[in-house]
Length: 151
Length: 151
Length: 151
Image (cartoon, rainbow over all chains, first blue to last red; front, side, top):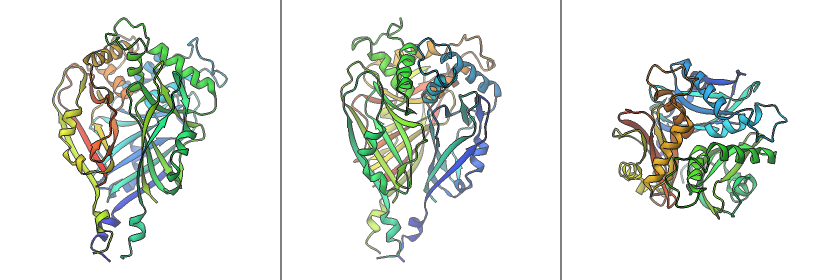
């Protein structure tokens, strides 16, 4: 065995599917649920966690983790900014909530990259992970989590 | 040689420039073109692919990969949401499509981070990579791809 | 010592807090300030730099690094698109600029992932890092930078 075994063996790579239960249309705080599904974060000294949603009508974002009012206002804003009644929609076969859901998903994005420091997600005090459900009946949502770093 | 040679040597880092040919203003599906330029993805068991567009008037997003209607509706939405005729634009010297292109580029973002699992991009069934061309005559677009992970 | 010591030892992981001084509401170019805080980028041949803002009312984006007009127009656009006077805001206790700041922060996003090539950030010619300050008096802003790659 050579002298670098310790540091070499300490490299971490982990991937895991996380299924989020069906939620109503809106913005939902899922920080705790995601953290509980990834106890291995504790073993990473310096690294990153990538969360990826494998859908085109739901998204992930970080925002204020305390007030439910903020999440309600997110829904109001995005419903107003991306109207179901816009005259230019042509992709309407899957319901009036479908095309706005695709747009909202790209405005907010399909992934988050979160730093890991000393075994914890290094989020700011007020930052929480939002699942953004843009469909009326989106059903379960599948995340793929990838964790890598130094153990 | 020490016993860890196998796992150590299996660490992968690759960077490659990918030039996307000139396309008209709008949203274009480029999943196949990007995948073909990166055959080394097949050699990665667990990792990530970072795609980065080196421009400020074009962007990358993930969205529905089946219906051309969806991509046409993206163009309609973003043209409506970021108007060329807004009274507040002051940066107008490079044409009426220029400042809206900068805004759209930041709304959608310059990069995608995509998980790699067992030698394949772990996209959802309906997820495709869009090149979002926000200029009337944007010309060729340069991507820098970075792939890293466990072999 | 085994023959792979050189390449093994060359793996780089670095995390550093960067404090950005208080700035007025608007879009501010911080590329130079961020680069100066991270001289270790020079030691990375192939890698990534992740910049993460630990707040929910400020954000990071990449855009045009030459004309101050562009940054002024960003402020005009986002103030118009996310109105302080929208009738649907319910989270109003922290001031009329607060809820719009949360929305803008999620539209633009809390992080940037930037490729590193041959010891330099591989940005396009016109790409600069913007600190997007969405509050009237946001104060100092805390970034967490994570750098990893091959030395």
